[in-house]
Length: 164
Image 1: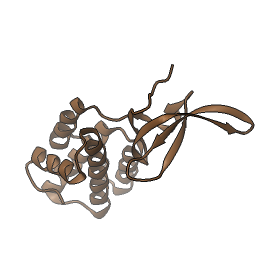
Image 2 (image 1 turned 180 degrees about the vertical axis):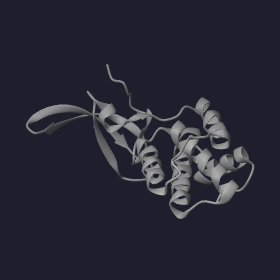
Image 3 (image 1 turned 90 degrees about the vertical axis):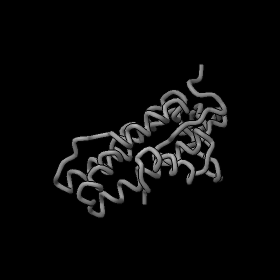
Image 4 (image 1 turned 45 degrees about the vertical axis):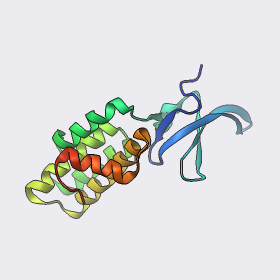
């Protein structure tokens, strides 16, 4: 039995939020295999993920609407011990963003946001914060079926100030 069904909203890092269109049979290296076909809304892009091992591509279910409040709370209160040395911190933030876990991304964004308010952010950290906020806004907009701007407004309401 399939873990994902047609119509399920999923996230495939680093490509973003997609919808499972169905299962397709594809021949690879001379053997037929089953793949989830993931279509990405607003584009003609699609990806094929092996049915027998979707975790190898980090495919996961998109957030549920009930989980959005947890994400908003992490944006406000999330704290993460990040290295003070910029190269080690950059490696860690890149790893978190590439991993695609929205709870880790929101925690990272919460920490970077706190630092930004406290002392300002160096360029690489500011870029990581923007990327984190974009990834979260993209997923939440798809889950709640709102625009990216409306998702960003939710974030601004959660943190109590305008986000750049």
